[in-house]
Image (cartoon, rainbow, N blue to C red; front, side):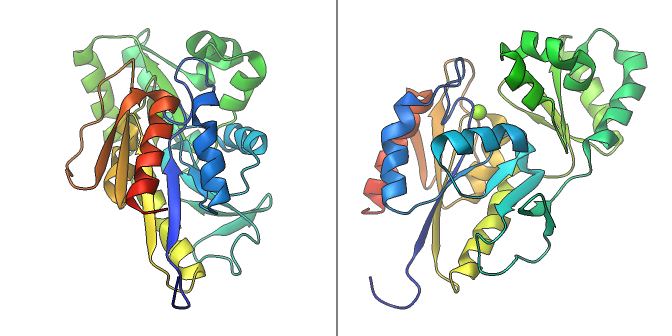
Length: 279
Ligand SMILES: [Mg+2]
């Protein structure tokens, strides 16, 4: 490697259905490639609809010290001191430098409460379902369901009604200033943010911290809520899903489609990307 600013490699990854199995949330199949990335000094940056607390638990399990993107891009959390200097446009709280791109959850709960009058019985939200309801909707055990309910910027909604009514519902939410993202299981009601803009912001923070080094990044995802991130990265890795169609992308260059599903596809795709980068 020559020059003062060696290229930086970054892996931004969705969790459920990508790094983690859609059904049992396991990551056995992705572990060998996670270890490989770690040994190469390439950060694995979770970018998920999950909450800060959920991602923190997984990071602790994986010994992952890197920043992460929570709640579909609503906020990016950088451990204080991770970079030499605090990136611009961040607030320091709970040992993180946080880049917030959404209003708080309470704003969306207020809007959903108003819509309850016209759409009763068509949907359930995490807030209203409570921990018991979240356990039923997600098959998560109680402690995990509690973590999933500790949301700060967004509200997951499970839709039970027909498609036509859902479109009216979505229109009303959007008119009230909310954005709605379709995840693997839930609609996510949130602010005007997405994983793509969070990725672009964090990539820039990495490049600046590395003295303007060139950053080669890959975004990995399996669902529609990953599209913005898959479009924003240098390379996109689309993970095949057993439960839904692959997300539609505008780009055709620099896209890897996994052959395998979930974490096995994740490992296979990351290996292909590393090979293409000659790493
Ligand atoms: Mg997913």
